[in-house]
Length: 295
Image (cartoon, rainbow, N blue to C red; front, side, top):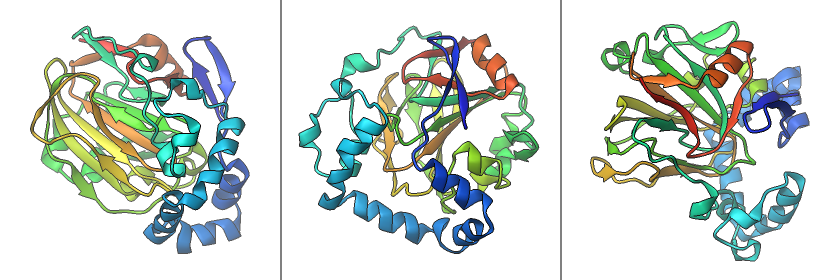
């Protein structure tokens, strides 16, 4: 059971998890863990499933998924019958009015939909994965000199589950450098897996880029792949100006994570998010929603 905080209702809610029983078995039972190590965490498994989700055969999954997880299709640009396969539905674009963006230059907005943890005054050598499990920024990006500049800063971990809108956007106007790709495994990023696999983010396939934000300084933007994520697709043009709210890219099928790092004294995260993080609860947010402000 995954409980998170809904900022709108100010209530705790239980997440509907796609493949919940499978995940628990896969990351808890001896047989499941063996299968995970031998095959499921490998690129081939996610590649095969990704190819299926790109095929016409997968279109039959769409209606059931919408019904099981109460997806509001009125927010989408396409009608249900216009999707050509499951991945086409999964990366669905939304109408502009579905995700209003606070354009105040002092306001920090969420880069996407998902469940958010926020950590202030970070120790770059002991970033929190879950209680008792940590990792380092140096290990995550493979760049020790750059990592050292973010000690004492802020780390945001936004987990996108399969039911979420799976496009991610720029938090501010500025210029983003090219994406650095790091090959790795394809573990799930669900809390069930995070509690079992040490340094999971450092083991999974991921991409990171340095974003020269106009109002929040230089920000490290990272996208982490997961089980059944066929691809991380970057749609922005490197080293060209972007505006706040512009699309940066999207994930194909699967739960995924975006991680952001800010330098010390650059931003102040909203108190309710910090408080819920201190209690061990993610806060549900949507793309464009205010999550902090310039320090």
